[in-house]
Amino acid sequence: MNHFQRKRGELCCEDVPLSELAEEVGTPAYVYSQATLLRHARVFKSALRGLDILACFAVKSAPNLALLSLFAKEGFGFDIVSGGELFRALEAGGEAKKMVFSGVGKREDELQAALQAGILQFNCESEEELHQLSRAAVRRRSLAEVALRVNPDVDAKTHPYIATALASSKFGVPAARARKAYRLAASLPGLKIAGVACHIGSQIREVKPFVEAAGKLRELVLSLRADGHAIHRLDMGGGLGVPYGDGDAPASPQEYGEALVRALDGLDVKVLLEPGRLLVANAGVLLSRVLLRKEGQRRRQFVVVDAGMNDLLRPALYQAHHEIEPVGRPRRGAEIVDVVGPVCESADVLAKRRRLPPLHSGDLLVLRTAGAYGMAMASQYNARPRPAEVLVQGRSWRIIRARETYKDLIRGEST
Ligand SMILES: *Cc1c(COP(=O)(O)O)cnc(C)c1O
Image: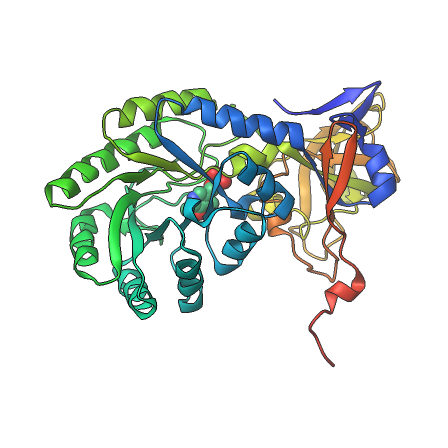
């Protein structure tokens, strides 16, 4: 469910025609619907109401301050993976006491900043990190609450770049070593064991891998308690997928919620969740304009648009599918085209052999479901200023990130 609908033939975000935004802010631009974001935030929470939860929005999926601030006002905490994300989350009004710090490698200054802010929990991913965090905490004379991110070795059946719980993954501590790692954590000064964590991957379509992971972690919580550790939090990570318009729709938040409630029933833990994509993906689109048409060899048809892989990396990085549609009333007929960006890389293809209504120079189009890992991964490659971001609320809208200028491209450089 999202609020990008056609009105009198023309695609709108809530009550704002996207053509109006293209006129006012130019293209390419990311456009987000506030009503969609808030709806997703509330649906997520209500799907998990059978558990005592703290939902921590995964900042990396959509780090804009305005979006983070909406989640903070909805009572969300934040899952951060760097000092920069800690800074963003605090700037957006996030409460440190609702933040968890994930990631396989955290710098000393990042640990110090998080200790100084007083975050809820550090999700540590190795024995060596426990030592580093212990030293940092002792130096500050503070106590860091820790969970170990355990790799439950489940197959999340997603793209290999976003599967994180296979035995070959760099993430987490292997489940077989977990009890020993907890013994180590208990012996180190400055650390206080609080919970167990996992995150099994992203864009997961089925409930089964989550249930498997929950089952394994449940067992682990019980054996850790038997070992004498006070485990009162279980962080199940994020990862539930969204429909991108290719293949089967993923399980709904309700199915996911019901499965987790069943799997964790009676365990007596606070359940932390770290949703990212699920909350923001289809609340955002990338608005772009057709530059020109060209014919390649063997009559292959290219539609060249003003957004490229620097603006939306997902198709190039993961062969991800984004639905494309014209903003104006679609022309009659259909043709098979490649929609490509202007970047000087063969990977700069936004859609390959896609059936679309005829598109001409000057037409506006959108790439749907671009709210998560869209702007978050944008770069200035090819010296292309990054796009503007716009937040729509009903009939009104505002720029939540100005389009970069050429001056921005050279900020901090010298000749
Ligand atoms: C990326 C990430 C998430 C969010 O994943 P989604 O698939 O966007 O829900 C949550 N937790 C951790 C540790 C992550 O790295």
